[in-house]
Length: 523
Ligand SMILES: Cc1cc2nc3c(=O)[nH]c(=O)nc-3n(C[C@H](O)[C@H](O)[C@H](O)COP(=O)(O)OP(=O)(O)OC[C@H]3O[C@@H](n4cnc5c(N)ncnc54)[C@H](O)[C@@H]3O)c2cc1C
Image (cartoon, rainbow, N blue to C red):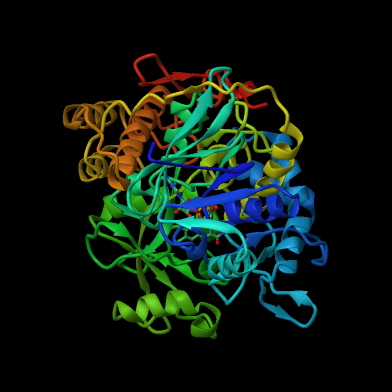
């Protein structure tokens, strides 16, 4: 290592989870250093549109219990009910703290505006700037964190432990690519999801799953990785690779409907909530209809909505940039990879099975989402678990440690991301079967090289390769259809033998192994 620095806590990531935690840590008197591999506002948070799902108690008929019930219904029986209740109940205070930190939500008078999204039984989603909620949250948190030490362009490579197994710091590449060690007894992963595993995604370039890979290599477990949520409606402008503009579900919440090219409303009769069914149902229905009709996309008809440009300025601008006027023309849409329901196994308190290693936000699997995330529950999770993780860090200070450090094992193999993305998009998106999953594994295996260049691309490609292997292993094991995991060869839910979460750990050769019994591993 060429350089060294130290802190009480190192936070990886400057999205909603990382910045919430960093601000709390500084308030608790911890010396906190935040690293982010890009600029401060380059994660998924700034792109969030719909809002934050929360029951503030001022909407007649809506209750915390109803929000919990909607979350469990969307999660397909795999949620951790206690985690759901804890996070949803903590929501109002977390949103209040965010507002105290400067986030401005849309309001008429003293009452915040609400919208509704798929799977929600009430209008309970608070939003900002119409459909620019994430941008406002990121702005407010970055502003509040101005006095903190935030190292931009710094890439987390591996968690460093001592011989007793406790976290001792983080191996990092600085903004000139020089390797160094940030010594700290606590590392919080808030590094977001892995939408970049697929060629077409709503996620930014930073969402390469580095945190899940780091945690697995450090000895932590990951779970529910096979549940990759595809957003039903991203703007379709022809075949493309990389981040695509989202058309928020709130557009359907406020009355828009899906139609096929012939103008038929195909969601009616598919689910009691029709166009507002949970995301997995709508994304699978769109995919089926596209296959049945041989079409490249379906259409979201928002032409009856009043004030579209004011209510959804971000979507309106994306449509206009693509030459579409959503007030007159139905919007062409397809599903795209959107959200990692699984991740590093952690409690609502952020603790993982590795002492001193914490996880919060999209990188974590707390049990809130189960097999399918309810819309707008993820910003909420980042706020709540980001805060709780810091309480755990404070409580855990003084755990026994050793001065002797262990050099982390290097990543096992790397395939180029284009190959990984093509294989995952072709064989492990919506609608998977045993043959396709095996083909994807073979393609990735045969393209995997042993050397990992020690730069940002190498770190990201190593993470994508490892997560692809893990997702394929879990998706192959789960021989049923549940939530966002759709198996065409096992189209029904099988509650007899597959209702448990599948847990991934690394075997001695550094390859993902699937089990079912390590969820208790989160402290
Ligand atoms: C288009 C879009 C719309 C969405 N809309 C909503 C919505 O309306 N409501 C809702 O609740 N959720 C929504 N989501 C999901 C939600 O935005 C994310 O789940 C959430 O913002 C994730 O926050 P986070 O703090 O966990 O991670 P992110 O905001 O993704 O931040 C990750 C951070 O980690 C850093 N990082 C990653 N790897 C490394 C590394 N190796 N070294 C250093 N730094 C690293 C990144 O640079 C970044 O700073 C949406 C997501 C997208 C993409």
